[in-house]
Length: 84
Image 1 (cartoon, rainbow, N blue to C red):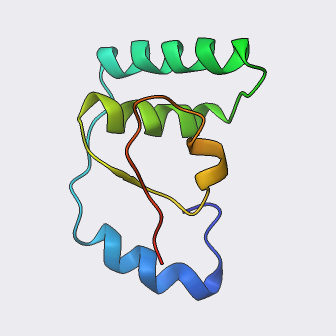
Image 2 (image 1 turned 45 degrees about the vertical axis):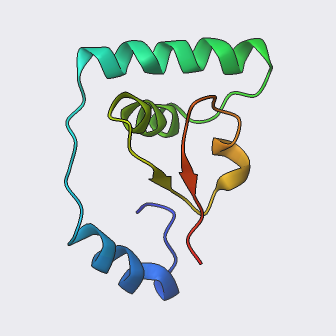
Image 3 (image 1 turned 135 degrees about the vertical axis):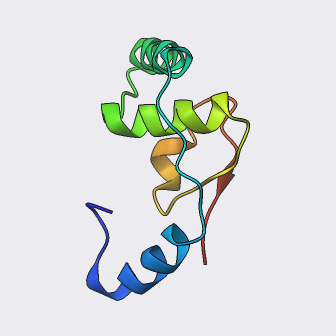
């Protein structure tokens, strides 16, 4: 929620009250490394925490909701949902 603006805080608070928190695993760390390698090779790196979030979603086969579609679309295998 570090990038959330005041007008979207209610949305995020409502969403977070309904979701399950998925722990970081060794497999997810390795997936993060793979994503970083692929993005670096394309000169399209994104922030490490964003890559870790994406890796967690991929490893757990769950869709990922984000307003930053342009960054996450770079990651192969990530199911993206853009909230309205």
